[in-house]
Image (cartoon, rainbow, N blue to C red):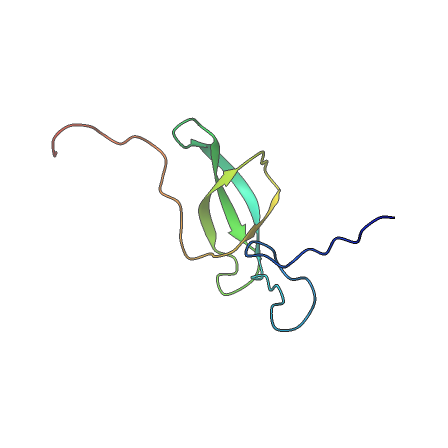
Length: 98
């Protein structure tokens, strides 16, 4: 005869039923990739892109973002925030002031 095993709700487990501990997600803001600028990160694992925000408070604003994973022009990104922009690529000049 098989025994029924009950799992207790632990620290790392999320509740899926409605009520007090229901999971809520932050709504994403869609942005379309308009231009691929280049690779970023210490090993080139990120791609820096220019994207245009399609909805929300910053609608029609073009912002620079770092994207992890494959991306191409025309892709739709779901951004959690549209206020912070990625730093420009390029090493800049080294040496003293001019």
